Length: 117
Image (cartoon, rainbow, N blue to C red; front, top):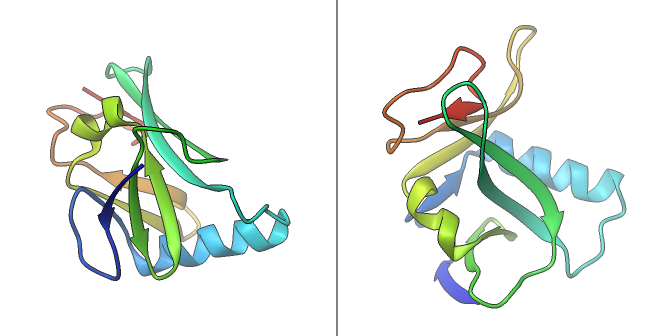
């Protein structure tokens, strides 16, 4: 694992306070094991070329580990270049409940906000 971020410094990928709070809520509600962390990545597909993926997973060799407010976020080395500078937020409004991504590397996005190119 490559530890890149500790504390509240922002480099690579970051989560807003509301996103961190939701990750902590999910971890508690699902009785997540201590060795499982949030993994964020991309996969081919979606209406703009790539889709974001998010799951709880164990760290693997070569992962980049970002840590904010005690929550570790894992990113596969191959996905890091697509996610560099991305800010993950969690909206709680009626029309926008869920995780959203603000990715400076995306040259195009789709209307749903789940896909980019």
